[in-house]
Length: 230
Figure 1: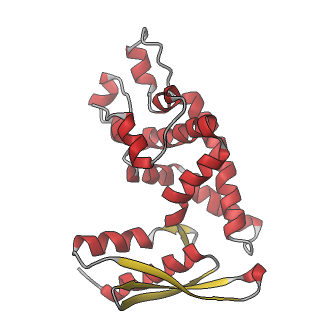
Figure 2: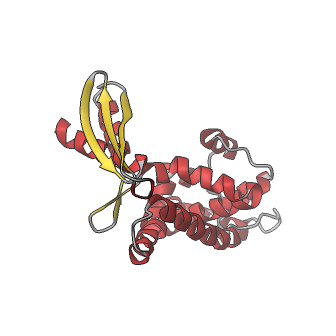
Figure 3: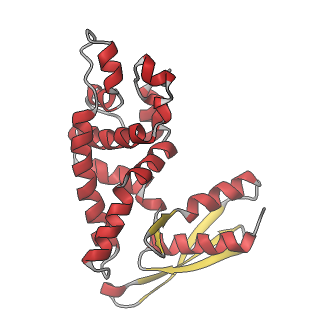
């Protein structure tokens, strides 16, 4: 059974002007096929639009966040962000699966947790949000729920050390984490930030980055290796 979409709006702190768009974003074709007289529309057209909006917003984010990276690297980074496994991860983190309207057959065969379905729902949600509230709302959503937890590591693998550290410290009831930007250096076009992560008065890690977010992620990565909890 799918959860109430009003619950999702409260969770995301987003209120749709046209709630029919939100419902459509979470309506699978299998549901429409089984409810032909309900006037429901599936999310496939919204998925098409959301895919294009994601390409644009991710491109702009990477262009601004990584001013010194060449076009080739930016292209690889964008591909890593918008590929299916990444979209599935984002959808799972936001629990999108439980809000999807599915046909009985799709439900019985585990469709709610199927990777392709989750990736499609994430794209269709982006498409719906864009139509309802414009590009600025999409950027705000992505910045809060997606971009804030990303860092590029090694072979352009996207890792979220801040979330990993948060989950670890919460699981062991260790206390509240606090990130502090303690230094900014370099010219404006090559700015470098230094971040430290604390738990109370104890410094757990320190990291450098070309953006505040990247510096915080590096600090969290160091903190994870420092704690060395099983």
